Image 1 (cartoon, rainbow, N blue to C red):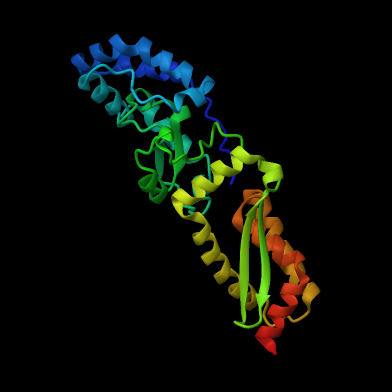
Image 2 (image 1 turned 180 degrees about the vertical axis):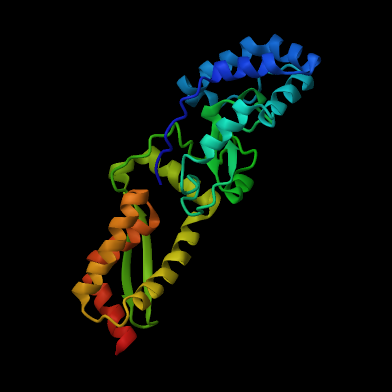
Length: 274
């Protein structure tokens, strides 16, 4: 899990262009009337994110203004289509779950149904998978169910996601434990990440996937019984995952543990072949 590269769009220019190119006269007049309020909201968003978490009201004064802004996101204008496509192409994995490789939707971090002024503000548009988008839905940061904002919240690049494996001889299986390093994350960031994981039920999903991968990994070694060589093979996978997705990806952490925990690999080999 890591931050997504921030969008570098001229959001003010995009808004102005869309308003000027709007063919519906009434909607154009409505958008022109509130353009200055929208630009003010844009300026407040990236510089005062903490205060924004507590805002419960939009800058819109009536339903006509709200609907006019919401409809901007579904505009057929080339500039909007281009922006959406570029945002979706920014990542290979969904930032929210760091699990799904089908990034096919865009989440409005502050929901456009509640804050329509951010409907086409690129800093509010986060690429994600459809499942995470559906679960997060219209959740507000101030609701108590806080999600990570992948442009704003500073996720450390240094390793903080760890997997520990132990062989359970009594049940002939791997016992798995996931830990987050507080010394790297700090108390507040760890709390945020754990809340994010809980909201999306990610830890159970990671654990289930890793248990299957441990079994599959042994099969992929084609009968290799030498512990050092097995760990070397796992280290190749570790380096690939790290290169592609960083240190704090659950598979990077898994294969790092498999490549370094010789005792676990030894017990696993004995369980399979003895």
